Image (cartoon, rainbow, N blue to C red):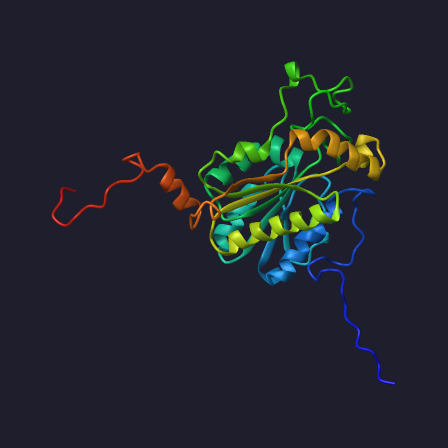
Length: 282
């Protein structure tokens, strides 16, 4: 009897190393790490990819991905990624950051890398809390959310309102693509992967700065089971951080972010000087 041919339908991505991670049970980081690795495999860019790890729960991402990785100081991943991309313009450079790293100590680097239109890809994990250092209030913690440093709930009169990163960055001309996703179901995992892959593809095609925000969970610091943490996320986080595409210059009919920016500044003479003809005044 002839042997049946076997077909592998599910396996570890080559770009994801066979190691044990430091993530807590039920943490969303593990899912997103896999999606990033799958995209690197499918785009065949693992050998060209250079990732920048943050300070936070994913601080040891350099041990998990098979591509080249660099560890950045707290919040400085966009600055490091900018330098790497400028030195290696043909590389596929990505920063992987949490909300404390990206939206608190690293907000200046985030804003300026975005407005410069750096050709990098940013994967942003928003779980509304500082995870690695014990569960303090983060820039993305919700109004009235109880944390280690807001035991009576976030008081917006004292601490201000949460930062909505996609909405904030959507006003910047250097940005090519922004999408907010989550990974609480197979359907949403597929959507998240599609967004991450598009963000990488934008970089490869020279479209411009792309960021994918993943609304995530932190069962340990929320004090919930993994199942209950997803339900808490759906009930509380998704109404405050709606999923969807917040900017996509290609979908708007532009080749890249620079072309879209020029169109928005079309009525500004100094931003769009008329080409000088031969014999005109210099």
